[in-house]
Length: 284
Image (cartoon, rainbow, N blue to C red; front, side, top):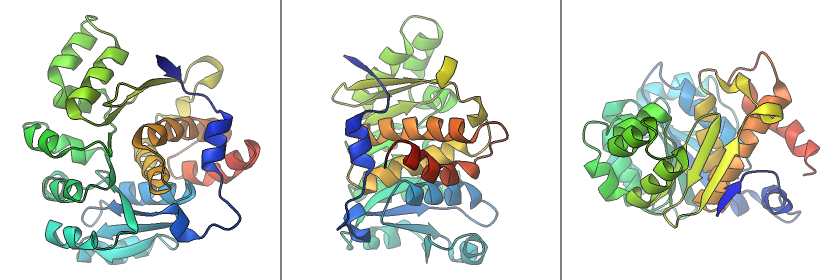
């Protein structure tokens, strides 16, 4: 059964926080960043994760990038992360329960960090460079994936990871829904294929569609960095305990609704800051 993503009471209840909750009740998300001059995308994801309700968010970057990121972040914590060995060591803290890799990470750093992140078996969003880094040989990525992962490709990234499915979809031999569903089963995780009609499928063959058309259109999302914000929303929700599939569905709805809330002139930095008013409007 294909589910149309809309705001439901179940989603609304899942987004609420309880009066007795504290920051560790809502998880700790780790967003990995790249080198100097490349931190903007990861900062967008980190702010989105915090706005989505993650109790704590840390941005991990090379030592040389700490000052640059510190100049832009306050509530998001910072830590130096030189290599994948250090990343594995961070998993000793069981409160660190969700990761986001890809936005602004850079292909060389992604090739090192993605296997280390997946080794930790935490809830993980792989986006942007975490996908394109493996475009010439996706085998090592697929071998490391697990069912707590969400892949968030746009059509070009999907084409690199699933070339046969992309060809069949583009040739009209299968629908976007079928291509995404088959990709999720092959990868063994949740796949979110972006677009004005976003399709989300899990390895368990759950399927959901969000159509941003007509009155639900959000054309202002066609701006640099909006996908980084979506990745951050999803990892923030997974830090709070949402399943990968449900986090992808709720994050997609929030992403488009925040864009409609802000309207024309939107840039990616506006999306996280549009969420408080949106949350009030939906009764949180």
